[in-house]
Amino acid sequence: MIELEKKLSICIPTYNRCDHLNNCLNSIYINNINSSDVEVCISDNNSTDKTFDIVSKYKKKINIKYNKNSENIGVAKNILKSVDMSTSKFCWIIGDDDLLINDAIKTVLYLLDKHKKTDYFFINSFHLDSKVIGNYKSPINPVLIKENMSKFSNKLENFECDFVDLINPNISFDYFGGMYLSVFNRSKWDENTHKLDLDKINNKTLFSNLDNTFPHVKVFSYAFKSSKAFFYSRPLTINLYGVREWVSLYPLIRSIRIVNSLDLFFANGLIPLNKYLKFKNLSLQYFIPDILKILLNMKNTYPYIIEIIVFYIKNFYYPNIYLSVLYQLKRLIKKLL
Image 1 (spheres, one colour):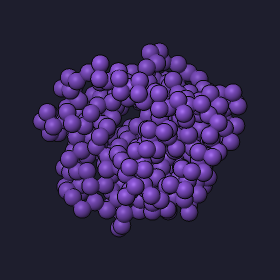
Image 2 (image 1 turned 90 degrees about the vertical axis):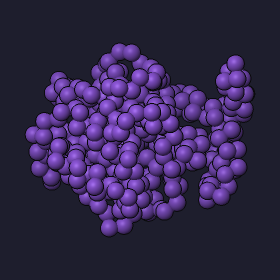
Image 3 (image 1 turned 30 degrees about the vertical axis):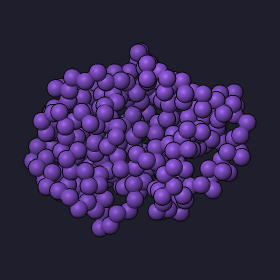
Image 4 (image 1 turned 135 degrees about the vertical axis):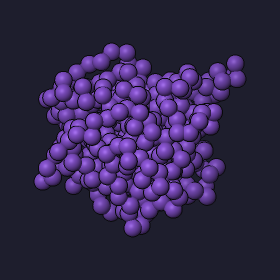
């Protein structure tokens, strides 16, 4: 058992995004963190850019643990590695392109002290188009960002609850898929990582199953089934969209993997049948447009076609599969107007 020395580890899996990592680490540095309470754990998936130079620069300013894998071990295993590096009671996995609001760490430490019996904290986030980042001097100070940013969750009040109460599309439409949304008890995480399927984790086809897409969600579904949770409504991170190289596979994530997460929650007894059916139908509101996007991008998505067919056969009776065409037309008309 690892001796837990600190309160919080900010865990950052990274690969060949040194410019974005520069912004991310600068946002952490601006938080003026106390190294006795916080560590930053960076797992580098064998980058070939200037990632090491960026990390070296910030090592002089903040408490960083750095690991460089001898080879690219895949997205999911690198996420797990970043948490394995931690020696803290709680972990917060963020993307290498995410930015922390200037009082984010102070706020999270306050929440951890105030809610000592809570194992999981949902931390709201802002969305920001990555295209606007070029308008700001690098490394970016998040305080200077003036764009009107939407929130991940529109809930306005903070509240304590059971973890299972957070399984709600009105709180998290992707059911904890965004890593940056979760601050969690490291010990309970460690006790349940064995639930991951190593064969699926090791599958080299990107996002070919739930385990190598959302490993954290699968662990959460076991680790916090009976845990107390806390929802924090004020966004503490800025999540960039449009940065990631896998953006062409987002339709697969939205209409297949997110539904897989719901299936897991139901199978593990975290949500009752009536909510499962309701939430699943809601999550299929993009299905046909998303599948068409996948088919049009056959070069990258052909390994998933058989799964998509099987998925449809198992879920053909959900109305939103067919209504998704009308929803898409409505969205297009609204955008044009």
